[in-house]
Length: 252
Image (tube, rainbow, N blue to C red; front, side):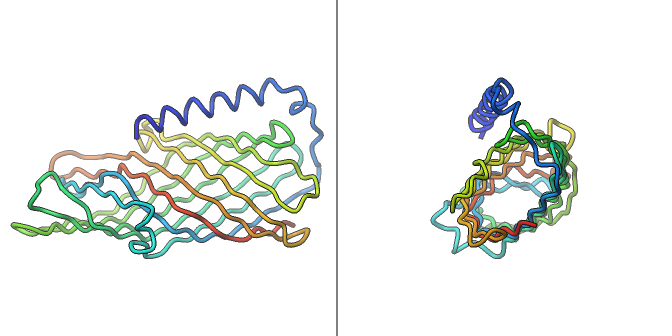
């Protein structure tokens, strides 16, 4: 995970540098009318990482091929409103995930049930005709249950809520009347305020059904590294959640 985080940081830095030095992007005219986009999505999710509740730790490794087998429920949606060079947005994610995992003891296995919510609120600044800088915060809430199967079967349960400051970059194809469009949303955050570190990459590809509606396909990676307490009070959530998304976009 550490390698992936470094790659993400470097990629974001390079993209910001390229866009910031592009004369064409800087001089592109902005539309001064309000534009609102609403996009509900559905997501299948897989998990890779480590979770700990009440000091008991379990390693979860569910591959993409196991998504349908382990998915309980996933849904998300976003709203973005733009006017000129500025805008505001919100992104809501709720996922119910379940999986079997291993523990440091070979004779003990674990079952993990996670209800995870992530609610982002952000502003955006237009950098060019196909790029926005985003900045804001994400409120994370997690309800975790871990049951250990083996000698002296035990279970742990806890709920935590924390806030991560976030900054990101969104790149998109120009609005040129074509039947298709694409965009990539990426962000980093946490910085020790909430999570030690958090990042997200979310590319999508859309096909326009009309001037105001489209069908969207994509894949989302969302990683959080949060830890609080120690020993018997240890709560840890260092998990990469990923999976395909499908939904609809509505533009007003």
